[in-house]
Image 1 (cartoon, helix red, strand yellow):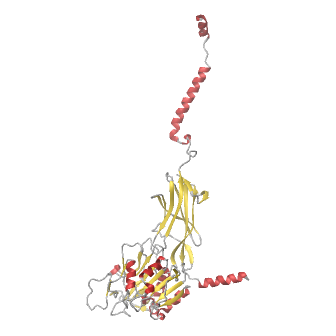
Image 2: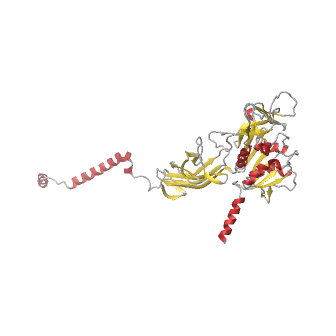
Image 3: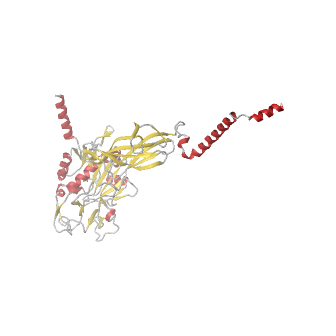
Length: 461
């Protein structure tokens, strides 16, 4: 009976457990009709999220309870009012990020951006247009069916790889419709920022309320504008800015669109892109997990000699270091594969690195990859550490440090003289002198005077 009850509880837990590796509690902040995004809510609930809808005007709203996070993830849709209320101030949202909470912030060109949102983005080095009512338009990449006059519904292919050494979580086929997006400009000083979807080269940002025929002194143009951008904090918390909240609406999930240069109409892939974007933001993808970490004394080929993870080695020892890595992919861990243009490196360091070595894959299991390297300890004793600091866009950070002691060679561990080929000349000279002295002594002891010499000695006496 107990095993049956345990089986039922396990099945129930698996049914309600979110695919996210960091929790299932999702708070959605919105003031408009939530039925506009019904398909998006259904997709999130199907992936195991427990969604709570709140208005920013709710005085009882709080992201924390007894000093701990009340929710794991936060989705903020554009409010109708000018602010987000006292429960969602920039400081509170930054505290939420510092407590490893994930935020998906959606903006809209239909309404001005609240000052609290602008202040929050400025803290993260994400800049919006100063007038806070600008939208991005493109006269060459727009939907001729829904934006024939304003050209403010952009049609873009899904984003590709950011860099050759970075894995892409948002690529694929199809066209994404971005209605009335708010463009963002990312600061150059923060290594934590990364654009997901950039505007085309022919796009620019302007205020539609401006009556001027021409646009001068535009906030940003072309690829300077990010339509979807992200920040991954040092604690691996994720913050994503979606420039178009309308792209999440039901009507755009399977809308029919046609670009100026297209010969036929196509269907948007906004639903798949929204899944990719929310999955990454809420840590369903791109989450790295460290398994076993081993180091041991070995031979030149890496075969183990002695115990695992000792605290002390000797200078000039051959040692092997192994680390097991997995990557979370929606509902399970899979082996983590380092991109071909990238390298996972190990530093063997004291005050500065003595070795910086590439870790190579040695073994693959069903859900992990073991990376390792064999090297020789330098001729320097002291306190050393194995360090791995792997930080890449769209992947959670790996930062490991393990200290060991490296001792000098003991007096009875030095090689003897006959093992040093350069000393053979001196050893031969030494033994030649000894042999010569012994020969002299033997000759002297066993030599006696002749008979004539003895007679002469007696006659003298």
